[in-house]
Image (tube, rainbow, N blue to C red):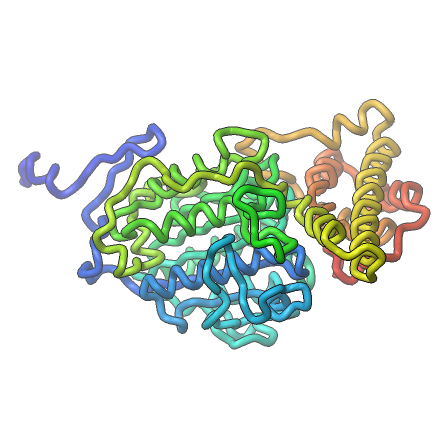
Length: 475
């Protein structure tokens, strides 16, 4: 019989978010000499395109540089980015991407495994699952992990309740992502998996959906009902160099990456980073911030970041600082307003009477017109289906946090396609209305009813690029 004292030496009891968590010896992690650390894998994806979304690809490139300095090999880092920013005619420094006002080039050396139309939901899921036969285009790299390996997934883009943006093809629905993670777990091809998610309403991707016990720990830039935020934007302090007319980064993303750069990741835990990122991203609970959330197996949060990101040898003597020295910007920009900020700054700086000024004014006006069309049509559909008083209440209803967004995800897809058929693409702005459409499903609305209401609400829809059916959920 093993003495009680000996048992206490073999196990440790931890307090994680108010819960006692038993940490077994086999679950402990060590430093670089720990031979139990398997291969580190990373999947980095920017789910947008367009220069006004500069910040997403800048985030991904910056994340790559951190992992590369941390010792991860290119063969184990898989990068998705549309790659239309670095050499975009709007970019004041061709071939260079920065993620902060004084930041260095983060584009150099980034392996662009999946670009352009190859950045899509199907390829993303195939890469996670290690399914080479399901890929279309790209480098062919997938996560070929084994049972002792650790996986880090980082996604940055626009999102909405229950959905994440993609620049090509259908967007990624939460149930498809969770199903992929379940399959990955069932395959027994990882020891632990960490998911960092930057998107509006990103909490809705895991809330009520991510099962416990799969050795997955996730943090999100926002809860299930709020936007995430861009930072280093025109008009911010600090602001980007004057020649930049777009946000350089996202608040949550910049927070975890800049934190990673000033700490020894052999000694900083996921939970410590979560706490510092949460404080910075909330922006002292001002109107310019969001609530960073955590989901899944929270006991993994005691793991050192080193397990997933490696660590920069130059930071070996750095001591963890509990108080975050990296303060948030004086303000931030709502993710969904970043395009307007870009068009307006472009208009403001252009010479009077120039084609550039005229085009910027047109872009700004079309974006606003699209927003009004989407908002008005969704509200009208609710009123047509449930009446003037009950309609708005039903559309805005929020389920308890332990319930998923919708009971029938196929219904949600069907109603979205039906709406877009009659009213045009929701696009990155209209993703905010996914909860309203989900609520129609939860209330029993069928495709035929949605079609009739959508046809009445949208006798026509604008023909400019924001409304193109080619870029919608139904693509």
